[in-house]
Image 1 (cartoon, rainbow, N blue to C red):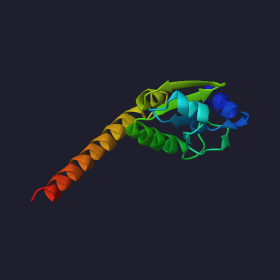
Image 2 (image 1 turned 180 degrees about the vertical axis):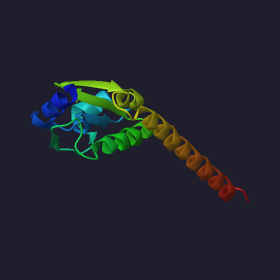
Image 3 (image 1 turned 30 degrees about the vertical axis):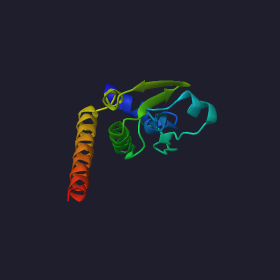
Length: 131
């Protein structure tokens, strides 16, 4: 009986902003001069959807991929709620949802891939410089 009541409450709830729209990322090396000039880019998920649920369909995956991408780039990730922005690591933000372990693994995989790519680029550069 309680499950039916909970389902009815979910169906009749007022539409709210999708959860993924609450997240954004700023460059990790943001300076006071950048803040004053406004010369920086705020990355968002681009979501403008409203939903009666926590996420619009497919937007949990959208948030997961954004957290992985931003975490791999070392950006400052924020969750905005009620005009208050809270910064945390991608895995800490994802801990609110069921995909925290996937975000942690994804960030590590992306960082390892970038490190390997940089290592190979150094080896190619060294081979070109050698006579």
